[in-house]
Amino acid sequence: MLTILITLGSTREYIDPVRFISNASSGRMGKALAEEALNQNCKVIAVKGPCEAEIKSGKNCEVINVISARDMLDAVKKNLKNADIFIGAAAVSDYRPAKKEKNKIKKQNIKNNETFELKLVKNPDIIKYVSNRRKKNQIVTGFALETKNLIKYAETKLKEKNLDMIVANKASAISSEKSEVFLITAQNRRFLKLSCKEKIAKEIIHESIRIFENNKTC
Ligand code: C5P
Image 1 (tube, rainbow, N blue to C red):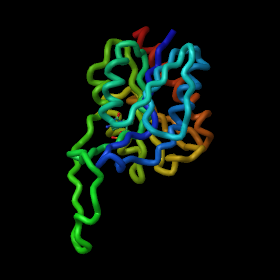
Image 2 (cartoon, rainbow, N blue to C red):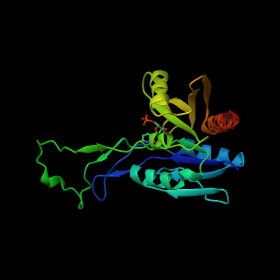
Image 3 (spheres, rainbow, N blue to C red):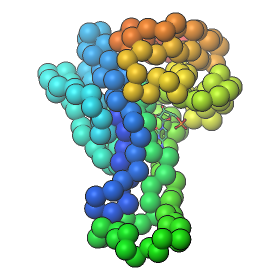
Image 4 (cartoon, helix red, strand yellow):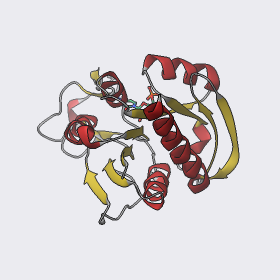
C-alpha cells in the first residue's frame, strides 16, 4: 500500500496573540487529492493548515492539524520516512513576523501620521526540505500559483525545488471550485482544461503514482 503525505491549507503566522498573516487557501485541492488517494487504496497522511476544507480521519487517513509553517514542517519531518509520495498543496506563508508580540499591539501607541513597520523573516521551504532529503524512490509533487509567466516560473520552481512534477495553476484557482492547470515534469508538459478540482486531483494522483511506479522499475 502506497503512503501519500499531503500538505494543504494555509499557514498562520502570528503577529500578536490575535492577529496573523495568512492567505485565502480553501484547502479544496488538498482535500480532493486526499480523497482520490484513498480511492486508489493509498494511505493518506494529511498535514492541514487552517482552511475551510474538512478531511475526516479514518482507517487509512491520518489528519494532523497545524497552524504555522514551522508547525507544518515539524509534522512533515515526523512523517516523511513513511511516505512514498509527498504532495505539497499547502499555500505556505513565505514570511512570518520576526517577533510575535506577547500582548495585543495597541494602535494608540502609533501616531496617526506614523507608519507601522512589521519586520518579517523567511519561513522554511517545506517542499525543498523534503526533496533535498528524499529517500530512494520517494516522489515529490509541488504546486505553482502565478499571476504572470506561469509556465516559466513553474519550470524554474521544478528545477530549483528539485521536484518530480509541478502543477502550474493561475492565481484565479485560489478559493475557486475549478482549476485549469499544466502538469509539468522535466520531460513533459500536459494541459488539463478548466475542470472541478476533484477531476484535476484525480490526474495529479494518477500521474504521481505513475512516476513512482516508473521510478521503481528504473
Ligand atoms: O515558492 P512557491 O510558494 O511558489 O512554491 C509553491 C510550492 O512550494 C507548493 O507546492 C507549496 O506547497 C510549496 N512551499 C512549501 N513551503 C514554503 C513555500 C512553498 O512547501 N515555505
